[in-house]
Length: 149
Image 1: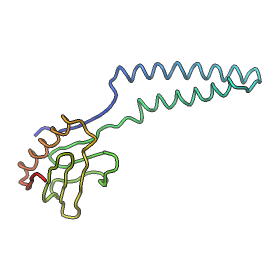
Image 2 (image 1 turned 90 degrees about the vertical axis):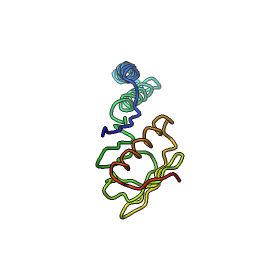
Image 3 (image 1 turned 45 degrees about the horizontal axis):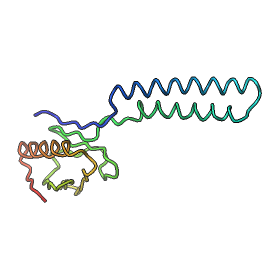
Image 4 (image 1 turned 135 degrees about the vertical axis):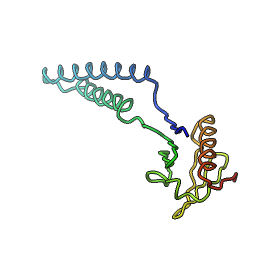
């Protein structure tokens, strides 16, 4: 059975453009800031340089380090999800799942210890269909009862 991995990240062309723009802004801002500091005139342009360097660093971090690696990952052993405002810490093992309920844009998982309600409303429709199909496939393979809610 093939694993399903949903990833929402920026395209590589956008990342490269943002990195070039961030690098240019950083070099320009640092140049202006250093020039103003050398002339010992800490006026408006010096603070513009500092603000530009901070914004450039934020831009670079936004398109590189702060990009999410995955949003939903489903394989034969576990179900991992990193959506905002979800109660799931880590992953849910399929061997602990006793029942799956499938709604329009949410899931209910009943496990041996807890019940989870997972809201998938902020995903794209095609990704939502792929997730539901994969969950049904896993449930059929592992004999987990499932149904519509």
